[in-house]
Every structure is written in C-alpha cells, then in structure tokens.
Length: 118
Image (cartoon, rainbow, N blue to C red; front, side):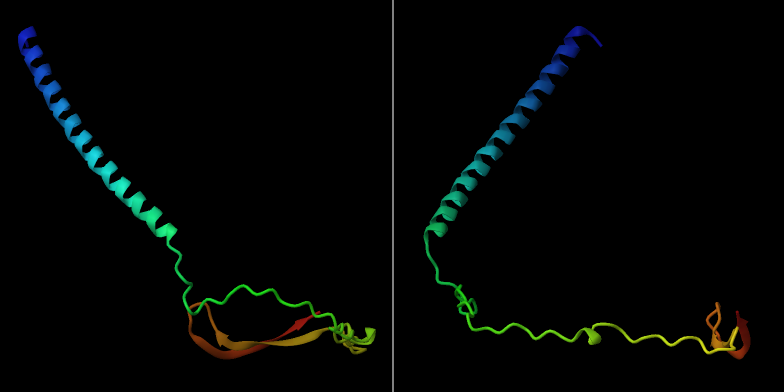
C-alpha cells in the first residue's frame, strides 16, 4: 500500500467518523430537548396539590390512655412447663418398634422389628 492510498483511506475513515459524530450530536440535542420538556412537566405536577385518595386515612395522634390498667401477672407456679416423670424403676432398656413405613426407594413396607435401646 502506497502512502497516497493510505492517506485516502484515512481521509475516508475520518469523514465516516465525523458523520457519526454529527449524528450522535443531533441525537444528544433531541434527548436534551425531551429532558427539558419532561423536567418542566415534573415541576408543573409537583406544584399541583392533589387530594389523597379516599382509602388513605389521615395521620391522627392517639390520645394517651392515662387510666389504662396494667396487666395482671401470673402466679410463679404457672410460669413453667410440665414436669417430666422419672423413668420407672426396674427398666434398664427401652423396646422400640421400627417398621411399617416407606423405604429409600419410595415403596411402602409392612414388616418391622422390635429393637432394644439401652
């Protein structure tokens, strides 16, 4: 490629870039004009006072309940859970029946077995 060809190619690229810049500048001007219109409309709407919709209640200060009684507290004997019974004397192990349920494959089985838990 000779120097003259390179210069002409670069001049063509420059004209293309300048055309694109001009188009972007026009788009920017249009967008700024739309923005000015929108901001003017927003200011106009903010100046207007519209009444609240009918489902909105006004803020009302609640009166202080001077004569309100305090809650009656429970007796201390009622402030705990059920007492657990001690294990029956003489039982050293526990018999538990495992069975009649679903296995890992999702099928139901009925046979089970008793197991001793010490």
